[in-house]
Image (cartoon, rainbow, N blue to C red; front, side, top):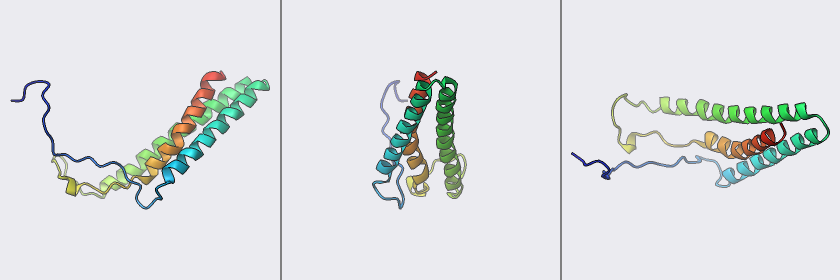
Length: 130
C-alpha cells in the first residue's frame, strides 16, 4: 500500500490539443481578432454611456458578454463529442495512448483564442458601465 502523500509514478502521456491543418499563426490571429472585438465592444459601450444612454450601454455590454460565453461553450461542446464518438472506445476500461483519438481540436482552441479577449473587454464594460 502506498503511504498518503506519496508520488506514484505513472506512464500516462497526455497530449496537448493540436491545430490539425491550421497554420501555426492561427491562435495569434484569432487572439488579435478577439482583442480587437473586445476593445471595440468596450469603446461602443463607453461611447453609449458617455452620451447618456446608460441603459443601452449596460445592455450592450451584458449582451456581448453573454454572446461571447455562449459561442465559446457551443464551439467547445459541439465539436468535442463527434470526435470522441468516432473513437470506438469501450466503456469502463483504461486504454493505452495508441488507442486515443487524434487531437485535432482546432475549432475549440481558436474559439477560446477569440473569445478570451472578447470576454475580458465585454466583462470590463459590463462592470464599469452599470
